[in-house]
Amino acid sequence: MESKTTALPRPTGAAANEAAAPLAPGAAVSAGPFPERGPALDDIAETAPSAVGEIVARARAAQRAWAEVPIGERAQLIAKVKRRLLAQTEEIAALLHRECGKPIEEAALAEVLPNADLIDYWTVSIEELLDESPVDLDAIAYPGKAGRIRREPRGVIALITPWNYPVAIPLRTIVPALLAGNAVVFKPSEITPRSGALVASLFDGLLPDGVLAVAQGGGDVGAALIEAGVDLVVFTGSVATGKKIAVACAERLVPTSLELGGKDSAIVLGDCDLERAARGVVWGAFTNAGQNCASIERVYVEQSIADRFIDRVVALTGQLRAGIDVGVMTTARQAEIVRRQLDVALADGAELLAGGAPEPGSLAFPPTIVKVEREDTPLLREETFGPVLPVLVVKDVEEAIARTNASRFALTTSLWTRGYERAHALARQLRSGVVTVNNHGFTGALPAAPWTGTGDSGFGVTSSPHALAELTRPRFYLEDRSRAKGELWWYPYTPALRTIAFAMARVRGGAGWLGRIGALVELVAAFARRLLGR
Ligand code: NAD
Image (cartoon, rainbow, N blue to C red):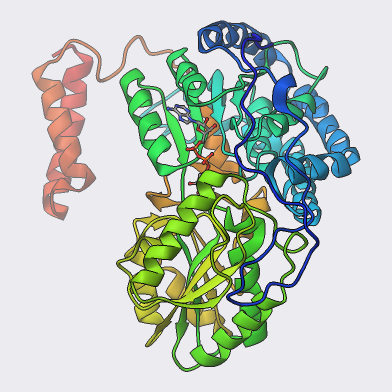
């Protein structure tokens, strides 16, 4: 499937191997019981960029035959992936622990179990979702005609994914894309090639050769894939790469779906269930070591409960156990970005309430809380993608919404309140693509719920029939059984036709009642002349 050329480099940095310990606020924190990364990645071969064209050509040939397989059969084949996935839960969790540094529980709960639901959802609903739908046509204006819309596969889809959820994110596109009759060429992140290979292996022997292919490697392989003449690019990753991909796709007029970064806020109202809000915010900020596009990266709390809320969040954070509740970061590069943002914020006057950066080079970044007042610091403006939670006290929810909306990112936002009706109205003022009340972030795991953003968070849609609309294209099919020898609007264009056009515009609302009655009379006469060819 791949041309074996170079071995992928090992990820830089390595997790330490120390015992789990509670994290004391402000303390330099040791890593949890994580093994060294590995084993070595030498057995995963990188695809040469020059080989990508051939992979896409094979996928294109395979796709034509795959699209002819009845949908029900495609669904039966892909339904088998669920059992394989569930049967390998422990191995997958162990791999994600090694390759990304995730706690085992988090790996199983976030990356395996929701994918069983995903496979159920799509395999059960795909036939109905792809079913032809009739288009109502006016029988007087369009006699003898019937229209239908079919959802056709796009063809070959390039899927380019990040390292933070390297099993769940690809499957969310691969499953519906294949069911819809597409071929997929999947380029996993170069940071998590093993997880990428594992995802592809779940389909081994179920699909015709070439329908799902893997191209392993970095940005050059991703770029080669876009150049190879694919029909859609589905990308999840950073804003910077997303912009490059948008340009490359624009030059080739290839449609693209971009799921990019986030700077999610949690807005905590004075009437919330404080314990639930504090626990939910701590999880939303630190799950996956904060390396989540929907991580809570800002919490705006109304001043009426700010002190109590902050105290509770700090206390709960202090109870988190390194390596058990919070994993190590996946890359040294990302840990360095987080450290820099934190350093600048502290220099800008932020107050450290818990955690703090580890020694340089360490991936064991402790869950960190800072109280911040200024928004003009990178920690509040850029995506952090690490376990640092800035807390900001606001006068009221309106201020929190204005500050939330001022960000260039708008992926998800959570409101924490018992005022459900008010929350429903407030949600409409938010720009983000997902709004959750008294919860955060987990809806990415719901296959029927669209996951989408706006602004720098991109414009792609994952999951739900809205995603299927991106993975297919509509084809309109019109059948005309009219016995007439021609249509009103066909040649020749005569004075009678012009009268008909103008009179119709008046009849259909371009004139008052009197004008319409006059136009009707004109229409009848003009139709008669038209029939005579005048
Ligand atoms: P990244 O942009 O560095 O890399 C993503 C993928 O793009 C990788 O597979 C990479 O090899 C590839 N790539 C790099 N340059 C390319 C190029 N020029 N052409 C084609 N492909 C290229 O992102 P990352 O560091 O892997 O992931 C983290 C980012 O992903 C964060 O910003 C995070 O918010 C975002 N993310 C978003 C969502 C979402 O649903 N919105 C989900 C997960 C992660």
